[in-house]
Length: 104
Image (cartoon, rainbow, N blue to C red; front, side, top):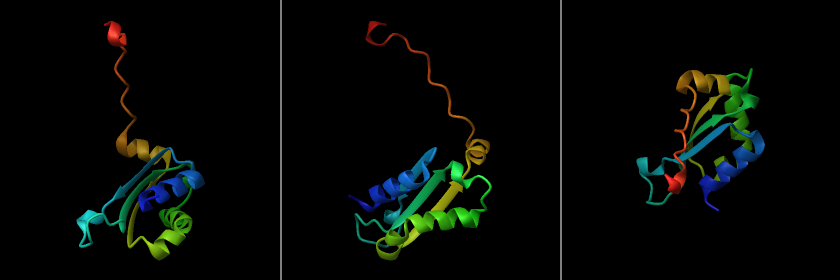
């Protein structure tokens, strides 16, 4: 299992996010090709409701404590409530109506 997959699994299991993106940004840094040391996490979770940003980050850091101590050199966190995410990004667009698949 890759470090990225571990991050995704741990955060999904602990926070049941509405939205989760884990992006390996290692290639933007001076590390060997294929490294998994620098990540960006975009996370939308109900558990963040009423929490300050520092508490949200502490929660994520606690969940990923082992990885932060051993494999992860840098972790950029972007944590939102569902309402904050919608205000920032709007609702997801509606899918276009179905045209009947292969019968159209």
